[in-house]
Image (cartoon, rainbow, N blue to C red; front, top):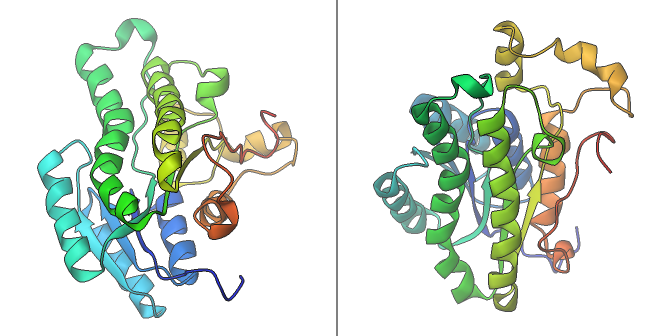
Length: 253
């Protein structure tokens, strides 16, 4: 990292208590950024923040359901008071579900769309004024490779992540003149607690069995995604916006 790069910009990571979100929080903290861990699981968020603080970072835990406007507003107030204005946000909060299309109820559909797509918008919109005021911002959304090629029994999930990709592109046009970049990373198969849970419930084939099907012959790690997030959040990535950055082991080019 060059000495001229600003490494103390306040970052929010939604879904930051586990998986890709936690790895991203660690990477951003290691770069010197104060990090607010937003997660619906309060104890897990605090554990993550404690870990970051133990490593010398400034870190804050906030219990946040990304579908809840009031919870987001409250958490943002705390972040601004304790850490400062927000310059970086990575939206990793998300849920998945496996249902044949004929069994997707309105409630299931609305829940997936509400967390994955609306929750992404809810998290981003209120931090934009901080970035506009600074003339600098980085927004990274976490979508899914399934939105590029489809996936069985996941119409609601795939639609939500496709929406995240489209939202990312739309925001990039709106915000580029203000010095704010907006990009999305669609992971392929990544070894996370959510993926392992789907494996255990029989909704997903053996994760390790998929390694031979991946061009690089291994399953992705949360750190693979987090490293790309950290780069996109840096000054070095100032000419990259509106892009789908495939960190997928070669699944989709």
